[in-house]
Amino acid sequence: MTLVPSAKYPMGTDNAGRDMLALMVHGIHPSLKIGLISGILGTILGTLLGLVAGYSRGWVDMVISTAADIMLTIPSLMVLIVLASYLCRALFWHRLASSSWGLDRC
Image 1 (cartoon, helix red, strand yellow):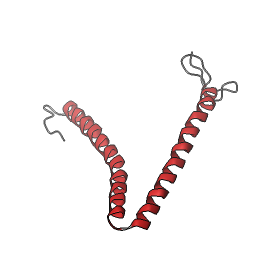
Image 2 (spheres, rainbow, N blue to C red):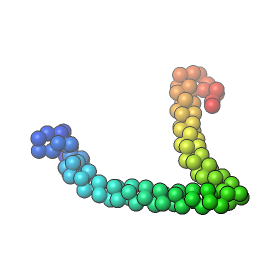
Image 3 (cartoon, rainbow, N blue to C red):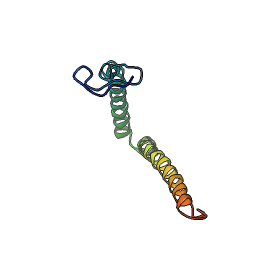
């Protein structure tokens, strides 16, 4: 039974009647733990690779810099591909519904 926010349940309840605030408080510990550990590991790894690249120079610097450039490009590229795929599909169905043929796809 879903309840709206009230004094007893500041964030309301879900379909099973569980307090949403209690669920969020209970789930914040693992989320913060994972976020902090991944942030610390990323900082340590990035600092070490930056020190090695700056100290070594030459081909080692070029390999580490190229790998860093690739890793910085791929996540945003994946997001853009997924977004374009979704928008293209949504536009196709909208055009299909609003036109007689819907043949002008992305």
